[in-house]
Image 1 (cartoon, rainbow, N blue to C red):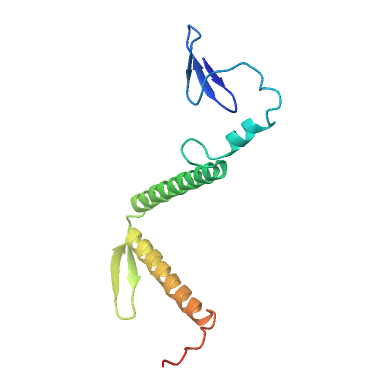
Image 2 (cartoon, rainbow, N blue to C red):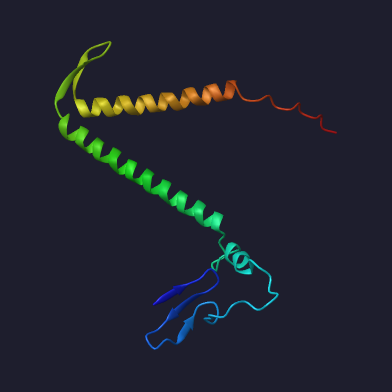
Amino acid sequence: MLSMTRKTATVLAADTSADTFTGPATTQAPPEGAPLGQHVRAFDGVAQGGETRRGHSRRMARRSRLHGYTLLAVGLFAFLIALAATNTVRVKVSWLFGSSHVALVWLVLAAAILGWLLGLVTNAALHRRTRAPRPAARPRS
């Protein structure tokens, strides 16, 4: 049986002997004149592993986000596989001088990659043109 209090975690075996994690099992009331809320301060402080409650919460939130991103990446990968499997038909692509035949899946993927690269270049150019002004350079002496 596992007995959890805010101060100690005690495992009681079948023979009711206490095997404690942080201290002896006690069923006595705190002594007269003891500061109230001492167990709360001990509980809210740094945990056994050196991690605060806020740090633990942030770590769990980050883990959940990473699981979500992983699920999204697996879904996109499955979508790309399905796209490639269904679009194997060869299509005619007309160029400025001549034409060629290519599988539709390669045409779609090439267009997607080209669009992504053009978006990166456009973003870099806009970022460069709209960045904050740099402070004036000091003359060297």
